[in-house]
Image (cartoon, rainbow, N blue to C red):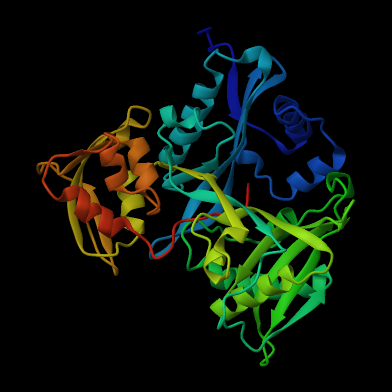
Length: 413
């Protein structure tokens, strides 16, 4: 590993953002464009964008957004890590490790967010920095020629309206927030984030239409579901072969969920529907007469890094009463290393240092993986990654950490 001491590590200024952004775009194999820079500026937090500089040249980056994430039993401020990149000329020199250390140590030193989260471009990268696979997601593909509902599915009494973006946005906010508080992994969306999630530059459409907005309107005037989607027209030898592409979908009631999907299935002349960020435990196949008409390809999604074990574990709630002592090893954030006694239930939780004998032995990566209740202690124990020191501790902790739904994040940040 080459000497990194000559590199300067610091956060960037507003005037440096364009050059910083260009380095990241090039590192990810793309060309930078003015509209991308303009859009990303709307959510950028310059004092949270860490950079490595070799002289006056940006050679590494690790940014973060200030977001609020739903966790079992409540909400928690998180550092949503983004735009992690190292210029090809400076790979294998310890630049990434230095940036990750600077970012996580800064969170700890400022007593900022106790948890960091990210989407990993490569699954091999972040485990060595204490991140664990905490939430899965799925790519959904539906064969619309076979997408019929089972008898008795209740789609409610609402009607579907097609609205332009500005008229639809208040309903989208209301429905999204109603679903957000129920599903671990969901993030808050302030004004700029709605614009970011629904960005729709024409040059990125690749033959798709502009986004359409469908809202399920209940008889009392409220909204119970929505979909932001595009259409990709195509014709084959046997007629129409078009596709519906769902960008964003949420529902506040089971009836609203069933109604918005039924609307999407009924769009004429289309043979397929795809959604890139569906839930791993998506309900849709259970509504269908032929469950195989909806295929889910499940993969990793959110990676979780517990920055402050005490504050993080105290911030969430537990499905059943729990009293467990964790022997935690954290080489990258050594302030977490040691024994922690976690007591909690559905109403309150407390996690403090202790000298009592440990029940479970694990590292920071395993703690991050189990934090949202998706990956379970039982799974990691079976993989040899959590060591049970007290018989029954794995089973008790698995039950306590579970949430009602598998964690899921419907947006990439």
